[in-house]
Length: 269
Ligand SMILES: [Zn+2]
Ligand SMILES: [Zn+2]
Image 1 (cartoon, rainbow, N blue to C red):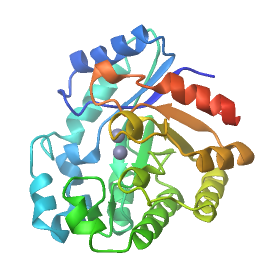
Image 2: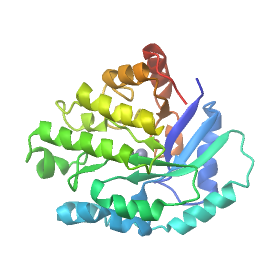
Image 3: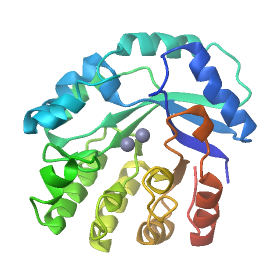
Image 4: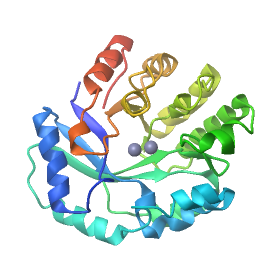
């Protein structure tokens, strides 16, 4: 199994060669063969229109999206840095991409802005449902206390399926992460099967992202057992991902995730 960390964020640092080097150094120290560097699209001012539904849904969310680090950098600067970084010789494979916050309502805009981006990969992640973020402290009063949990999970599953169907993404970020927001927020096997079959048909990779474990204290090291069984049965490739937001967290808990993938017989990229 390749030693890869497929999802690490520049979020807490600058868009600079020095900060990228800090991640590559950390990856080398962890004995990785490959690292995928990205950041959320809400870092970049060009992506502001993609967040309209989240901003308009509630002032608390609008305030969160006007806070530190949001829409303050330019995608053009990031792309210029990536171009320069690709001239470098690294001690391991270093790939550059974006974690795109996917919503069905922003899909036409995302198709426009993402078309032909000179990046190695795009991760599509569902972070909101019907305009409401689901994993923030304010998500409880805004979302979870207002709707039946089963209806929220249903909408989440639909959004993840649509993110795969959009054809925009090479990789789906943490595809069952709704589980960390409520103990009864469990995706049923029918949905997992629909999403997984669509991913197989389109050659989209699923993430086994340990962020749910070390950032949100969920017991799973990445994907649930139901997901892993389905991916193993359908021979769909998975990528290991820490969701590190700092160099010190590169490869975090991925040894446990790799052991689990082996145990379930899941194929890895
Ligand atoms: Zn994410
Ligand atoms: Zn992430």
